[in-house]
Image 1 (cartoon, rainbow, N blue to C red):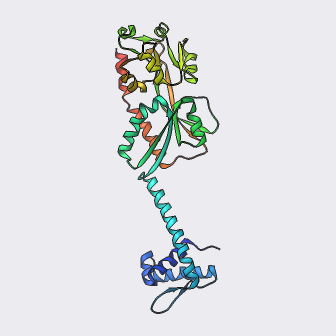
Image 2: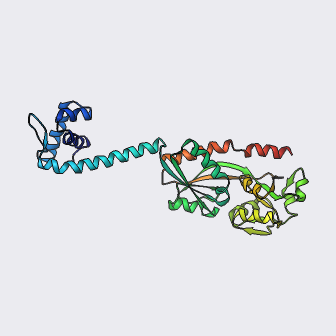
Image 3: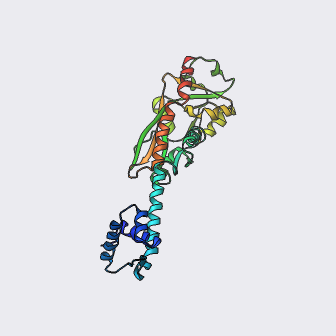
Length: 302
């Protein structure tokens, strides 16, 4: 049978104060309750830990050996419990999130800044990577969760819908499409299309017949090529800040209006920390009020 936490705290309090009366006050218990804890500890150990006299309570030789050990254990435990309480109250914490490169340089910094405004003590670490690597980062435990477009189901990876957005076409200012009131997928076929490699384009080709002129790994590369006059690119509206840096035009693609769903990916065998849960909940609300919802209505009104 092992000593209980109450018995350990009783011994430490008596050692610090040298008095049953003061120790009882420190622990907010009656003196008789404290005395009972010490007696129970001595019964468990089979030896005396406190030498009692009328003037002062002194530790026995065994008590003096146990005191620093109990004190260290209790300090470590109290520190750990305080840390957990701080994390639960979001007074501290670390969130690690993986996201595709384009999202990592447009949408997520904006979201992280808004979250930190209300939770300044929580650190959000952003891991940018190719879109095909997001699930792998989640599976390996390198990040708490990842954000990315819809993918084929993977073992031990759970998906929660975050948002869906339509495709838009990006082209340079002065492009012939700029004067059109509506841009359709049929219009895209008249110009060199710069597309992304992998499942993003593969899924798009299931919905519309396209013939990419060039396929690249990152959307930032595609936008740079569009800026150089090498073609047009279909992307998701959260790329707008980067398109604006290049002075590019962005127009909703219609007939048909296609959308892509984006998910929060987590490892199903691992629970999120309070900070990570809080950030996911924040992202869900953040996307509801995102400016794209207003910009889309403006595009449709053109």
